Length: 109
Image 1 (cartoon, rainbow, N blue to C red):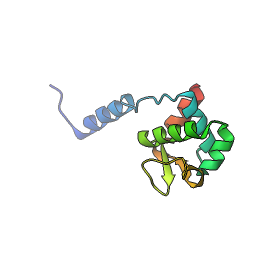
Image 2 (image 1 turned 180 degrees about the vertical axis):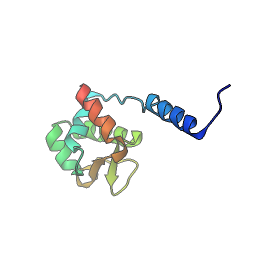
Image 3 (image 1 turned 90 degrees about the vertical axis):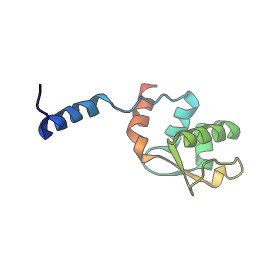
Image 4 (image 1 turned 90 degrees about the horizontal axis):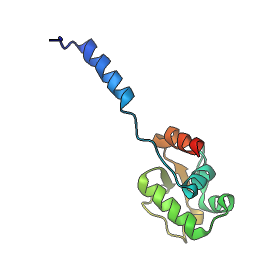
């Protein structure tokens, strides 16, 4: 029987952590367009997102609310859902915890 030393447990834990990575994020075309428009460096106002995506305001609002519900996008000021009337003046940014995974998801498209 193998003796459970702290070095062995640490090695096993690191190997398990490498194998149990976060699930791959799969974005629809609309979601990818909105995330691309927001970018990964700075926040962006809803009006700017509307201009750069060239989508209908209702579609952008629904897509943003879905991304907010999933935790991929955050609003400034914080809101769990954004109404269509307040969307142009609300700032949106990508959740820093998901930047790497979202970049990978967009690169796969």
